[in-house]
Length: 164
Image 1 (spheres, one colour):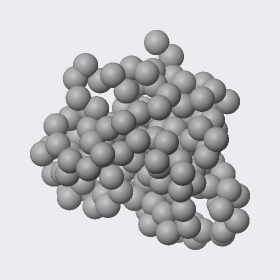
Image 2 (cartoon, one colour; image 1 turned 180 degrees about the horizontal axis):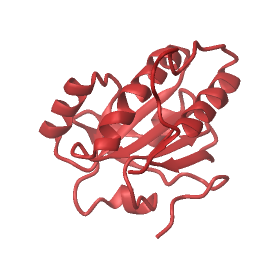
Image 3 (tube, rainbow, N blue to C red; image 1 turned 180 degrees about the vertical axis):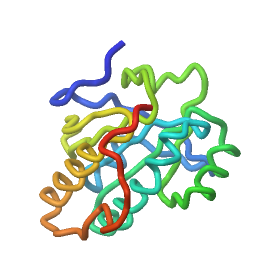
């Protein structure tokens, strides 16, 4: 199973949030580009990555970026994760047997996808990748014609890559 390739259509999904709200990729894309991040609450690399995704969401969400974490855990644990790591974007639940994760070819967590409004995957990657996050930010800024602040702050010690 391989990850959905850049340039291919993102598989549609309909999932409920940890709070029970219904979300679909189609509805998210109607507002603009979407970043999805597949994760498990127990994954240390996910725990490291999500505060940076939240920072990106706070920078660009008001300009029309959709973001969704897709959890491979139950709603209660996902809500606890959101609270612990300061995540305010929706966390959607992909229950066992992880049908959506399988459609996307997720083999490691976190796995991130930047999906353009036409549903084409623009960027995909797994683990924490500083280069991927910067590329996502740059692409989103281009889509939205905005100039966001720096994603990584001076003095932050941020590795180039952490495997998932």
